[in-house]
Length: 297
Image (tube, rainbow, N blue to C red; front, side, top):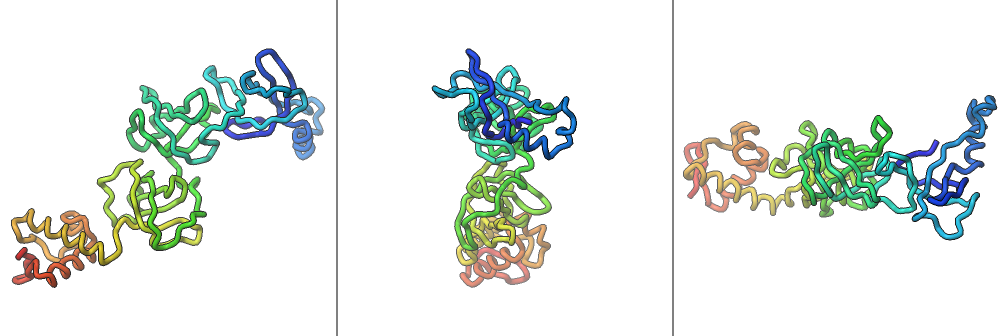
């Protein structure tokens, strides 16, 4: 069978005024039939699908029996058609595509072919607008049409990145997994995750963030942090704590002994980061800890 969404090498079997018809190479068809039970049934032998390669894609001198590498999709009239053009994405790939139009039924993306790629609303994870760039995969829906989806990208991202612990990287947020963390596509292709205790709530799907690799798993997937190295981060965290103290008229209504949820809600810091920041401010004599209260000096 001919497969939509993929490149295939097909054989010219018929020439017309409007192009040529292509089919799978005879040798490949016969080999497949010999491996199947169909070769025992004379009525099923020799049948094969064919697809049109429009005249504008037919190279000079192309003749019956010649082979040509083509990509298969459906044209504006929903007919299978071949092209020698290179789309930006193929079946089960993840790529960054530009939004050309947002309509009532969904969005239409530029994927390098005459007919734009449809992204249904049900396959969106974030509201998008014309001119946006979105990370999507190409899939075939129940009706056999090719479409884009912003969902289920994780299995299709690779784990063969060149990065190691300590490297600075850029990645695009594609999913918030509340039980695990924030899922990120480094360089729009490598699988990575920021742990759930880091607050990225100010971001939205599609945002590009800078992060540092903290580890590489056995399968190659990357662990990331958006926080700076401890010494640099402590300075930023200390500044954050001072801003919170100021918002409470110079005295915090809680201490380092407060629950982690309270500290995170008020400061956006983990309990350990908060305690480190308080210790740093105390050594710098910017706060006092008398009477069990954290006060600005």
